[in-house]
Picture (tube, rainbow, N blue to C red):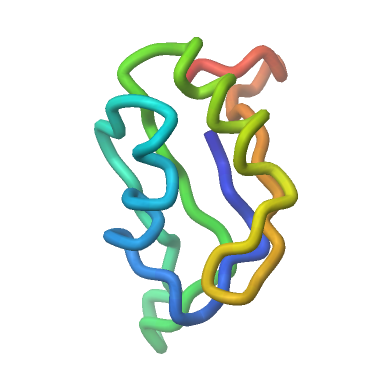
Length: 83
């Protein structure tokens, strides 16, 4: 799933912790600019099951993390999500 509108202070660890209440987080990464190292404002979270990812979308979309209101949705080219 993808989380956008991330704070510049959000790290991989804080992203993982925020979503861990919804299931087993296999990976959490904040995308960073390769030249500056600054957050690009979005990241990806991978869960061990699709149902956990759906629960995270329902639970975290619109919630605040590090002072920013998150936009969370399932990722996947067909819109059904694959994580």
